[in-house]
Length: 260
Image (cartoon, rainbow, N blue to C red; front, side, top):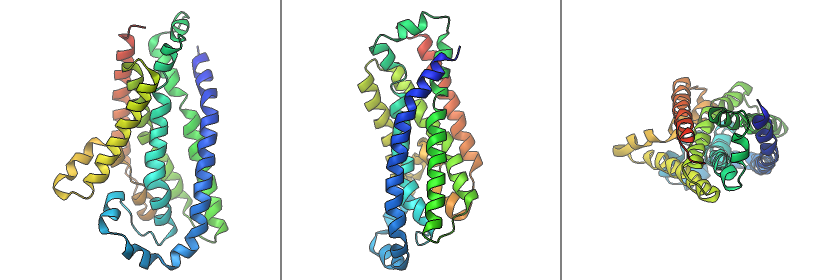
């Protein structure tokens, strides 16, 4: 039975398209200012304090790779897209319970495990649309401003972001199961992902306590190293996938014990 997967997939098309539009606008703005920024990059870099570069892991921002890593990925992709995945997943269960749809769903010949897996499976829509759309837009955009962007690095920065985004999503899924009210679960999911991102960002500027960043999913995804240095942290991606599987199993266990 894949009806849940089809229904949930259709629901995510519109919000994914809207987010692609947001990134298109932001990318257009940033790409349009890059030629001028490139000429004055050294002076602009000196104007910012060092902790800003440490906090966001910025490097070689005078290059198109470093510029995109700083302006598009270090904040907008890691934080905003991460929050988006947490937000939509935080409504997977709590929204259906609040709207009395879960009783009807479970009255059909479908297990609770299948319900969770199909809802999570629907995330293929934003994963495919967002990653594919942004890759295409940035590659064409850099070509139009007479810059060369390595397509392999661009693809890898998106490919390696998938485990990170899945972890953000499953955090939202857990809150969706634990918390009854959909709005409350969404606020908690967004808050948790944001706090984890903030912890990792602060850990970058505190040498004595940099270990606290290990608890944050964003610690295991570094777009700057991928784009600028072509360093692909497959081990870190594997760690994120393990965390995703663990939290997914936890969510299934919690949902099986949940009183609907």
